[in-house]
Image (cartoon, rainbow, N blue to C red; front, top):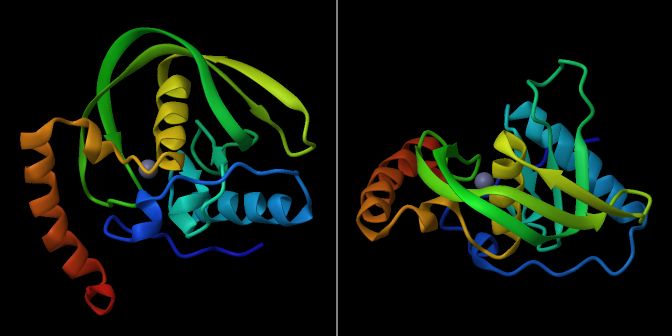
Length: 174
Ligand code: ZN
């Protein structure tokens, strides 16, 4: 397994729609393993493939702290097929480190997708589970949480982000 480099806001891959995975093969399983390691290394609750530069519909998440003994979850080609209610809570993102804001999400969702064996799964989620799934599925559509806070808040977050990104990675600024 290896820790992959996280792509930051401003990287075009984060704005692209990810491609569905036609077949869950060893390459996809390896990608999922590397994404899980990358998520734990960065202490994130979830990670989507575009965040490591791979424009494919793969997400991983773990609602517990790394090392707490819970199983990391992998979902391939996830789709929200039903939703109910709305709820606001704070969100952050490994692709926009150091920033967080309130984001409105669906309260309860039903998600379908494939597991690592290529079997169809159906997940009913609420609370943090629902929020993490919606955040990661958004990444597959090229949407970041800063796109969901309203235009004024977004402007403010983006101006803060400019400074943070310079500080984090001066060599990656174009
Ligand atoms: Zn994110």
